[in-house]
Image 1: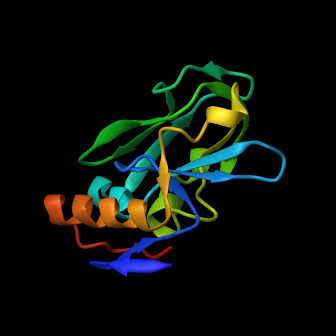
Image 2: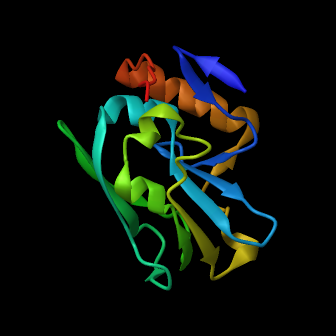
Length: 148
């Protein structure tokens, strides 16, 4: 794990280089969430709406909408696929994203239509970390985690 301006950046995840992370799972699904810098910029999340299991999404469509007191926005998927699971805990307590955005606060698991090319539009490793550090610097983000 890297840390930059207090933001945790995990080298083993894939990133859209804006605010979404993607983690491949053993069953072929891809787990989607938002990054530490993104949760910091959004503020304390108060509401989450996540697409229902079975919903098909085209690349770039929102799998979820998150809202805080100062921000509302969608969470796009970087590939086409079907929602196979959603984090029901977030529907009850969206603030979990502000506490642990990479583990317990994943948003959805999506089965890609084209697994061989699902990760074509995301980056990982040193390239992703360097790009995310630039993003953090550009927006002047200093990450903070909320407590429970």
